[in-house]
Length: 94
Length: 311
Ligand SMILES: [Fe+2]
Ligand SMILES: [Fe+2]
Image (cartoon, rainbow over all chains, first blue to last red; front, side, top):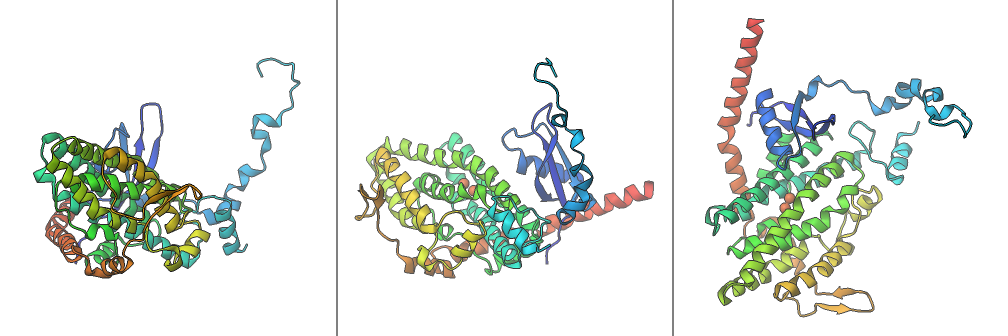
């Protein structure tokens, strides 16, 4: 029989000025080990300057199955986009 | 809404399927099987080369080989992580590997008899793997495609260090050149087998192509590999051990002979030169590591309790 460790999701900041981005997951007994494993698995070639690890079970996700209704509120608000507004060609810097 | 039609539309439009999307059972099963086999191959693939780490001829070569073998461990882990997004259980996959229920690439059941094999594996085996893997960067399942992109970035180092190693040996003594040729003779045909059986005998290809899991047929990729490798062999000064190998100007490709498919099926069936040794080694490493996993889990549990009682 084998002991199993919980699953952690790994997020890496590639360099200063960028957001942390999800890169994958790994198993580790605790947060500290998860960080060390994440360094060895996901940043062997300077791919990151900062790592977050999050217990996979702590993540709440919207389901793509609910896609239509869940993201509907932003679907019909074309006036949130700059292209919604007709401005004459000869108005500068707008 | 018809889920199956929606899925088919997504795949046909070259959009990626993501973990929580609805997908046909067969698609999920095919992916778990293929990605797990791929992960197992990366993990078992550490053994043939790992065999030479302690005997590398210089510190430079040792550091390179260590880094390469460590990359293969990483590749295995990216891929196992991708299977888990499909609901696969990691412990169970390891169990499937060490009990022989699931396969890995037949190439790793051949032994590494000389140090030149380290170079040949980098050049031919990682070269063939790259041919297989580059198209998989566009495979329809998102987490698999992303793992493949990461892997392909790292593979180019693997192939180049192998080729450089062989070039160094080829500029050495006659004995070293003979060692390289002998190694290429042993690995050429098994490398061609890495693309799988001929298309006519490949049971899963058609459905996998339709689902865009697979992007090219086995024979297409094999041809591509041969065409890429021939000029590299010429430059290196080695002979590829195939009397039928020659340029065909009409096809614009090289003609070449067929590997011994009986041998292939023997190796796939568990009767290759090193099958038993590879699986036994992996099993032992897993079982010997059990106390470490248990101790780390116990330590984590204890610290959680301490934190809770302090709060
Ligand atoms: Fe690899
Ligand atoms: Fe590799």
